[in-house]
Length: 131
Image (cartoon, rainbow, N blue to C red; front, side, top):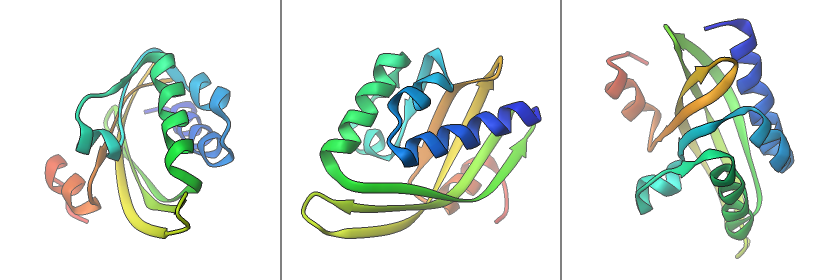
């Protein structure tokens, strides 16, 4: 994993937090496969740049505010495990905070795959790691 890849992930999270759809799309490979928490429940992936745009639109439908606070980026050979906390305020006004984990695979400086885990412990277990 290069420093450039880590910076791409950081920029992508900043773009997400700012609601910058073009910034999120710019960090992704055109064939990206993205499985956020909502897709763990619904099934399937968001695929490609159009999928990333659809993901951002879906988030806008569900949340009046949302952001990711990153606490750690762990390099794992050619992967990066992103650990942090999701904070959101739903359209109903309900506020949530919960720990999250995403596994990112990069290709030529772009996000190629990203998979969310329902908890950090689940991510550690799936990857054979200890917290």
